[in-house]
Length: 388
Image (cartoon, rainbow, N blue to C red; front, side, top):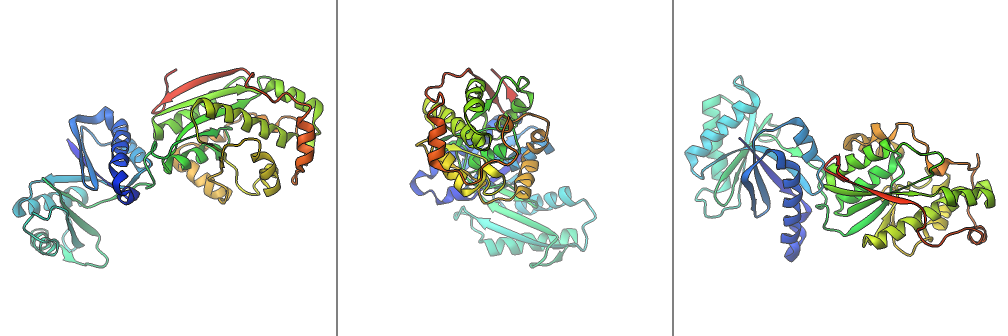
């Protein structure tokens, strides 16, 4: 059996609401580790959580490292709050993580005592444990640049000892910052935008708009939604066919304005889903100046199609930054698979970059805009798997 110790960042700043955030964080962690979690093996303490698991895998550690809300976590040795036991556990942790040939390696001991009833202060514990390890393992003390950093945390009932931290992404637990609807195109940007909002605690609902004339295989979209669900748990994907609307737009709107008109209708459709799902905002993958529809003038012309707030979390990110995060969260390789985006269907080679709102209004006055009469169906994913 192994034990994992979790630390959190922003949760400590939540004052009277802290317990609400911690309960949601515990729920999200338990969902991820459920397949290997020991019965009654999850515990909450002030400022930390621990989990007893049957087995540790690289896949589990990678997933936990990307779970919103976790600042860092470690695989730890647990022992009773007694000096001799702590010293022995510290020795075992060093040998397990660094092997038997550690003589001469620079080290330090960093102790933290949240249990003030423990009779040995943190500096004294550093000295006692450090002296023991120096003698028993012939280590070399180096407080500024250690190769081995032995960390000792004295909790309410147990002491946790570890030598390595795995960095998480921080942020807030998913489900603590309301619900938003993401315009989910299937490109590189929108899955990263969804994940970025999850990192701020938002629960996301995905809306993919397509044209049934050109899109019939949605394996890629479903794969992306399944990957996003690994970080949130349950994710609902709405699929909306805008073929009828696009047919009217192609007939009545000049090619250079079609992209703007398409996107405004996509926002209207997503806003209707948001009302159905009690969403409080829409989320886009827009990055300022990246493509023609993302100039400041066009963003202004597009975003006022809905009275709900539109949040573009990637607005100041460049493409390389977005790609790097897409690779990290496992969406990039799926995103670059071939798929015909609805927004690329019969638009101009040189689309409008400085849209005039009076022109937008004139073109839309000729189009069917009201109601969600377009064919819609939903797919639900849970922790990487399609369930209905």
